Image (tube, rainbow, N blue to C red; front, top):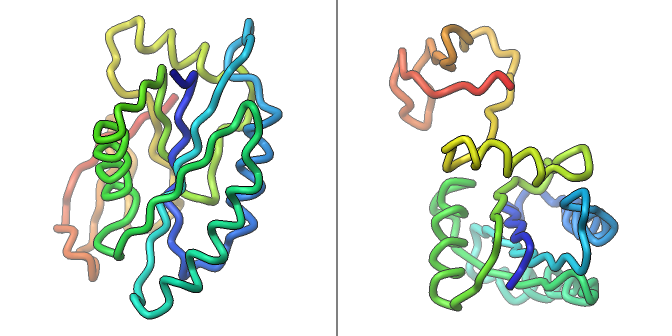
Length: 175
């Protein structure tokens, strides 16, 4: 059983492999709980690629990260064709966890360039879960003129190339 599973949604085209090693090293020295003893973390790197012919090269580069495994950190890598971003990574990671009968206390899904800033974050997450929240997370304020933030929603005012409809509402968590 893992104390925590940290899923990283990594698009290979961003060329930020150093973010992956930085995250793994950070988690290796990170305390999840205030009274943490023998914490174990599974890091799942979901590597997204566009070009099938580059997959051997991509695997060669990303598999180097397996050398960062420690007593605390286990690393699994999933490779998938680019059929969606972080939300698709959430589904892919969930299917992987279920298929491989992985037991974990908490799961966090992040892009490669984001991570929590303070230790003992899972103590705060536990408080929210104990108050009947099943998902704890945030949407980042983007500072874009085409988005309004009002009444706990993120309001899109333009239609974009991704076919997001104009006036679409998304939940927005302030705290």
